[in-house]
Length: 311
Image (cartoon, rainbow, N blue to C red):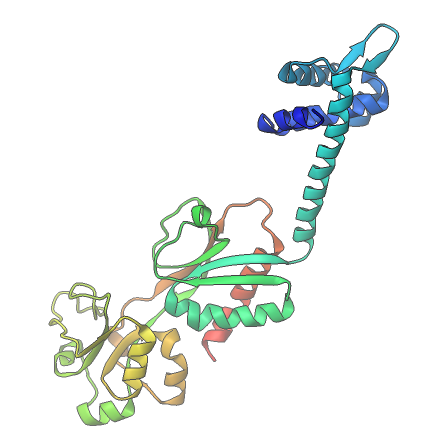
Protein backbone atom coordinates (compact mmCIF):
# COMPACT_ATOMS: atom_id res chain seq x y z
CA UNK A 1 0.00 0.00 0.00
CA UNK A 2 2.74 2.49 0.93
CA UNK A 3 4.20 2.69 -2.59
CA UNK A 4 1.07 2.25 -4.71
CA UNK A 5 0.37 5.96 -5.19
CA UNK A 6 3.95 6.79 -6.20
CA UNK A 7 4.09 3.90 -8.68
CA UNK A 8 0.90 5.05 -10.36
CA UNK A 9 2.17 8.64 -10.44
CA UNK A 10 5.43 7.61 -12.10
CA UNK A 11 3.55 5.76 -14.84
CA UNK A 12 1.72 8.94 -15.90
CA UNK A 13 4.53 11.32 -14.91
CA UNK A 14 5.61 14.36 -16.86
CA UNK A 15 7.14 17.67 -15.85
CA UNK A 16 3.70 19.12 -15.01
CA UNK A 17 2.87 16.19 -12.72
CA UNK A 18 6.23 16.50 -10.99
CA UNK A 19 5.45 20.17 -10.36
CA UNK A 20 2.05 19.16 -8.98
CA UNK A 21 3.70 16.75 -6.56
CA UNK A 22 6.10 19.48 -5.43
CA UNK A 23 3.15 21.84 -4.93
CA UNK A 24 1.25 19.31 -2.83
CA UNK A 25 4.26 18.82 -0.53
CA UNK A 26 4.59 22.59 -0.16
CA UNK A 27 0.88 22.84 0.80
CA UNK A 28 1.28 20.19 3.48
CA UNK A 29 4.46 21.72 4.90
CA UNK A 30 3.21 25.30 4.64
CA UNK A 31 -0.17 24.53 6.18
CA UNK A 32 -2.26 26.23 3.49
CA UNK A 33 -2.46 27.24 -0.15
CA UNK A 34 -1.36 30.83 0.48
CA UNK A 35 1.88 29.83 2.19
CA UNK A 36 2.64 27.27 -0.53
CA UNK A 37 1.97 29.89 -3.22
CA UNK A 38 4.47 32.29 -1.64
CA UNK A 39 7.08 29.58 -1.28
CA UNK A 40 6.72 28.43 -4.91
CA UNK A 41 6.20 31.95 -6.32
CA UNK A 42 2.87 31.18 -7.96
CA UNK A 43 -0.73 32.17 -7.34
CA UNK A 44 -2.91 30.40 -4.77
CA UNK A 45 -5.33 29.60 -7.60
CA UNK A 46 -2.56 27.73 -9.43
CA UNK A 47 -1.70 25.85 -6.23
CA UNK A 48 -5.29 24.69 -5.97
CA UNK A 49 -5.27 23.65 -9.63
CA UNK A 50 -2.21 21.44 -9.11
CA UNK A 51 -3.69 19.77 -6.03
CA UNK A 52 -6.96 19.05 -7.85
CA UNK A 53 -5.00 17.64 -10.77
CA UNK A 54 -3.28 15.18 -8.44
CA UNK A 55 -6.51 14.16 -6.76
CA UNK A 56 -8.22 13.61 -10.11
CA UNK A 57 -5.35 11.55 -11.52
CA UNK A 58 -5.06 9.43 -8.39
CA UNK A 59 -8.81 9.05 -7.89
CA UNK A 60 -8.46 9.88 -4.21
CA UNK A 61 -8.90 12.95 -2.01
CA UNK A 62 -5.59 14.05 -0.47
CA UNK A 63 -6.70 17.04 1.62
CA UNK A 64 -9.72 17.65 3.83
CA UNK A 65 -10.50 21.35 3.53
CA UNK A 66 -12.97 23.34 5.64
CA UNK A 67 -13.39 27.06 6.16
CA UNK A 68 -11.29 26.90 9.32
CA UNK A 69 -8.67 24.25 8.78
CA UNK A 70 -6.97 21.89 6.36
CA UNK A 71 -5.77 18.35 7.05
CA UNK A 72 -4.49 15.25 5.30
CA UNK A 73 -6.64 12.28 4.51
CA UNK A 74 -5.24 8.78 5.03
CA UNK A 75 -4.38 8.67 1.34
CA UNK A 76 -2.87 12.13 1.60
CA UNK A 77 -0.52 11.08 4.43
CA UNK A 78 0.77 8.11 2.41
CA UNK A 79 1.15 10.19 -0.73
CA UNK A 80 2.91 12.99 1.14
CA UNK A 81 5.59 10.69 2.57
CA UNK A 82 6.20 8.94 -0.74
CA UNK A 83 6.19 12.24 -2.63
CA UNK A 84 8.92 13.61 -0.38
CA UNK A 85 11.05 10.55 -1.12
CA UNK A 86 10.38 10.79 -4.86
CA UNK A 87 11.30 14.48 -4.95
CA UNK A 88 14.49 13.72 -3.06
CA UNK A 89 15.42 11.09 -5.65
CA UNK A 90 14.88 13.70 -8.37
CA UNK A 91 17.04 16.20 -6.48
CA UNK A 92 19.85 13.65 -6.10
CA UNK A 93 19.62 12.77 -9.81
CA UNK A 94 19.86 16.44 -10.78
CA UNK A 95 22.86 16.92 -8.49
CA UNK A 96 24.62 13.96 -10.13
CA UNK A 97 24.16 15.58 -13.55
CA UNK A 98 25.47 18.88 -12.22
CA UNK A 99 28.55 17.06 -10.94
CA UNK A 100 29.05 15.60 -14.42
CA UNK A 101 28.75 19.08 -15.87
CA UNK A 102 31.24 20.50 -13.38
CA UNK A 103 34.10 18.14 -14.20
CA UNK A 104 34.73 15.75 -17.13
CA UNK A 105 34.00 12.18 -16.07
CA UNK A 106 32.10 9.11 -17.17
CA UNK A 107 32.18 7.13 -20.42
CA UNK A 108 32.60 8.81 -23.82
CA UNK A 109 31.65 6.63 -26.81
CA UNK A 110 33.21 7.61 -30.14
CA UNK A 111 32.89 6.20 -33.65
CA UNK A 112 35.60 6.90 -36.22
CA UNK A 113 36.72 5.55 -39.61
CA UNK A 114 39.36 2.85 -39.25
CA UNK A 115 42.42 4.58 -40.68
CA UNK A 116 41.75 8.09 -39.39
CA UNK A 117 40.62 6.75 -36.03
CA UNK A 118 43.67 4.57 -35.46
CA UNK A 119 46.22 7.07 -36.80
CA UNK A 120 44.80 10.33 -35.46
CA UNK A 121 42.09 9.84 -32.83
CA UNK A 122 43.59 6.98 -30.80
CA UNK A 123 46.87 8.79 -29.98
CA UNK A 124 44.92 11.90 -28.93
CA UNK A 125 42.78 9.78 -26.60
CA UNK A 126 45.96 9.00 -24.65
CA UNK A 127 46.98 12.65 -24.29
CA UNK A 128 43.42 13.64 -23.34
CA UNK A 129 43.22 11.04 -20.57
CA UNK A 130 46.42 12.30 -19.01
CA UNK A 131 44.58 15.53 -18.28
CA UNK A 132 41.17 13.97 -17.59
CA UNK A 133 41.78 10.52 -16.08
CA UNK A 134 38.14 10.16 -14.92
CA UNK A 135 36.91 9.97 -18.52
CA UNK A 136 36.68 6.42 -19.87
CA UNK A 137 36.75 6.40 -23.67
CA UNK A 138 35.32 3.69 -25.94
CA UNK A 139 36.59 4.17 -29.49
CA UNK A 140 34.90 2.02 -32.14
CA UNK A 141 36.74 1.93 -35.46
CA UNK A 142 34.44 1.24 -38.39
CA UNK A 143 33.94 2.65 -41.87
CA UNK A 144 30.16 2.40 -41.60
CA UNK A 145 28.02 5.43 -40.71
CA UNK A 146 26.66 4.79 -37.22
CA UNK A 147 23.41 6.16 -35.80
CA UNK A 148 24.54 8.19 -32.80
CA UNK A 149 21.18 8.11 -31.03
CA UNK A 150 20.12 4.51 -31.66
CA UNK A 151 23.60 3.10 -31.02
CA UNK A 152 24.45 5.30 -28.04
CA UNK A 153 27.48 7.18 -29.37
CA UNK A 154 28.37 10.60 -27.98
CA UNK A 155 30.20 11.71 -31.12
CA UNK A 156 31.56 10.46 -34.43
CA UNK A 157 34.14 11.39 -37.02
CA UNK A 158 32.73 11.69 -40.53
CA UNK A 159 34.73 12.01 -43.76
CA UNK A 160 33.10 13.53 -46.82
CA UNK A 161 29.38 14.24 -47.14
CA UNK A 162 27.35 14.69 -43.97
CA UNK A 163 24.11 12.76 -44.07
CA UNK A 164 22.26 13.61 -40.85
CA UNK A 165 21.14 17.25 -40.74
CA UNK A 166 19.99 16.87 -37.12
CA UNK A 167 23.57 16.55 -35.85
CA UNK A 168 25.93 19.33 -34.85
CA UNK A 169 28.98 19.29 -37.16
CA UNK A 170 32.34 20.94 -36.58
CA UNK A 171 35.06 20.95 -39.29
CA UNK A 172 38.21 19.23 -38.04
CA UNK A 173 40.68 18.89 -40.89
CA UNK A 174 41.02 17.73 -44.51
CA UNK A 175 41.45 14.09 -45.49
CA UNK A 176 44.17 13.90 -48.12
CA UNK A 177 45.28 10.93 -50.16
CA UNK A 178 48.83 10.24 -51.30
CA UNK A 179 50.47 7.98 -53.87
CA UNK A 180 53.81 6.65 -52.76
CA UNK A 181 56.30 3.80 -53.02
CA UNK A 182 59.54 2.69 -51.45
CA UNK A 183 62.84 4.02 -52.83
CA UNK A 184 63.76 0.44 -53.76
CA UNK A 185 60.61 -0.03 -55.86
CA UNK A 186 61.06 3.30 -57.64
CA UNK A 187 64.71 2.49 -58.37
CA UNK A 188 63.61 -0.75 -60.06
CA UNK A 189 60.51 0.51 -61.90
CA UNK A 190 60.99 4.25 -62.28
CA UNK A 191 58.86 7.22 -61.20
CA UNK A 192 55.44 7.48 -62.88
CA UNK A 193 54.92 10.88 -64.49
CA UNK A 194 51.20 10.69 -65.38
CA UNK A 195 48.34 8.32 -64.52
CA UNK A 196 48.85 6.67 -67.93
CA UNK A 197 52.10 5.26 -66.53
CA UNK A 198 50.24 3.30 -63.85
CA UNK A 199 49.41 0.50 -66.28
CA UNK A 200 53.12 -0.36 -66.32
CA UNK A 201 53.42 -0.42 -62.51
CA UNK A 202 52.48 -2.74 -59.68
CA UNK A 203 49.55 -1.03 -57.93
CA UNK A 204 48.36 -1.95 -54.45
CA UNK A 205 44.61 -1.71 -53.91
CA UNK A 206 42.10 -2.04 -51.09
CA UNK A 207 39.68 -4.96 -51.33
CA UNK A 208 36.60 -2.71 -51.06
CA UNK A 209 37.66 -0.76 -54.15
CA UNK A 210 36.49 -1.76 -57.60
CA UNK A 211 37.07 -0.66 -61.18
CA UNK A 212 34.72 2.31 -60.67
CA UNK A 213 36.26 3.81 -57.57
CA UNK A 214 39.87 2.57 -57.42
CA UNK A 215 42.69 4.93 -58.31
CA UNK A 216 40.44 7.73 -59.55
CA UNK A 217 42.83 10.64 -59.90
CA UNK A 218 42.19 14.33 -60.42
CA UNK A 219 41.79 15.35 -64.05
CA UNK A 220 41.93 11.79 -65.37
CA UNK A 221 38.43 10.46 -64.70
CA UNK A 222 37.52 9.96 -68.36
CA UNK A 223 40.79 9.00 -70.04
CA UNK A 224 42.64 7.08 -67.33
CA UNK A 225 43.16 3.43 -68.36
CA UNK A 226 41.81 0.78 -65.95
CA UNK A 227 44.13 -0.29 -63.16
CA UNK A 228 44.69 -4.00 -62.58
CA UNK A 229 46.12 -4.20 -59.06
CA UNK A 230 48.93 -6.64 -58.44
CA UNK A 231 48.04 -6.95 -54.75
CA UNK A 232 44.82 -6.35 -52.82
CA UNK A 233 44.21 -6.33 -49.09
CA UNK A 234 41.27 -5.49 -46.84
CA UNK A 235 43.43 -3.42 -44.47
CA UNK A 236 45.16 -0.13 -45.19
CA UNK A 237 48.04 -0.86 -42.88
CA UNK A 238 48.59 -4.21 -44.62
CA UNK A 239 48.92 -2.34 -47.92
CA UNK A 240 51.31 0.10 -46.26
CA UNK A 241 53.55 -2.72 -45.03
CA UNK A 242 53.61 -4.23 -48.53
CA UNK A 243 54.60 -0.85 -50.00
CA UNK A 244 57.39 -0.48 -47.45
CA UNK A 245 58.68 -3.89 -48.54
CA UNK A 246 58.79 -2.72 -52.16
CA UNK A 247 55.63 -4.37 -53.49
CA UNK A 248 54.44 -1.41 -55.54
CA UNK A 249 52.64 1.94 -55.63
CA UNK A 250 50.32 2.72 -52.75
CA UNK A 251 47.27 5.01 -52.78
CA UNK A 252 46.20 5.58 -49.20
CA UNK A 253 45.33 8.41 -46.75
CA UNK A 254 48.23 10.68 -45.92
CA UNK A 255 47.71 10.15 -42.18
CA UNK A 256 48.54 6.46 -42.62
CA UNK A 257 51.96 7.05 -44.18
CA UNK A 258 52.91 10.49 -42.79
CA UNK A 259 55.80 9.17 -40.71
CA UNK A 260 57.05 6.97 -43.57
CA UNK A 261 57.09 9.98 -45.91
CA UNK A 262 58.87 12.10 -43.32
CA UNK A 263 61.56 9.46 -42.78
CA UNK A 264 62.02 8.74 -46.49
CA UNK A 265 60.85 5.13 -46.17
CA UNK A 266 58.18 6.00 -48.75
CA UNK A 267 58.39 8.63 -51.50
CA UNK A 268 55.38 10.55 -52.81
CA UNK A 269 54.69 10.55 -56.57
CA UNK A 270 52.04 11.98 -58.93
CA UNK A 271 51.26 14.83 -56.52
CA UNK A 272 49.54 16.83 -59.30
CA UNK A 273 46.93 14.11 -59.87
CA UNK A 274 45.93 13.23 -56.32
CA UNK A 275 42.20 12.92 -55.54
CA UNK A 276 40.56 16.04 -54.13
CA UNK A 277 40.81 16.23 -50.33
CA UNK A 278 37.61 15.58 -48.39
CA UNK A 279 36.46 17.42 -45.29
CA UNK A 280 36.61 15.68 -41.92
CA UNK A 281 33.94 16.69 -39.38
CA UNK A 282 33.22 16.01 -35.75
CA UNK A 283 29.50 15.31 -35.35
CA UNK A 284 27.47 14.98 -32.17
CA UNK A 285 23.87 15.10 -31.05
CA UNK A 286 22.22 18.43 -30.41
CA UNK A 287 22.25 19.27 -26.72
CA UNK A 288 21.67 22.69 -25.23
CA UNK A 289 24.23 21.93 -22.51
CA UNK A 290 26.58 19.12 -23.63
CA UNK A 291 28.54 17.45 -20.85
CA UNK A 292 32.16 18.52 -20.19
CA UNK A 293 33.54 15.10 -21.20
CA UNK A 294 32.30 15.79 -24.75
CA UNK A 295 33.09 19.48 -25.02
CA UNK A 296 36.59 19.06 -23.60
CA UNK A 297 37.41 16.15 -25.92
CA UNK A 298 36.15 18.06 -28.95
CA UNK A 299 38.27 21.01 -27.88
CA UNK A 300 41.25 18.68 -27.50
CA UNK A 301 40.79 17.39 -31.05
CA UNK A 302 40.37 20.86 -32.52
CA UNK A 303 43.50 22.07 -30.77
CA UNK A 304 45.78 19.14 -31.57
CA UNK A 305 44.73 17.36 -34.79
CA UNK A 306 46.80 19.61 -37.06
CA UNK A 307 49.77 19.40 -34.74
CA UNK A 308 49.47 15.60 -34.44
CA UNK A 309 49.25 15.09 -38.21
CA UNK A 310 52.51 16.95 -38.83
CA UNK A 311 54.56 14.81 -36.44
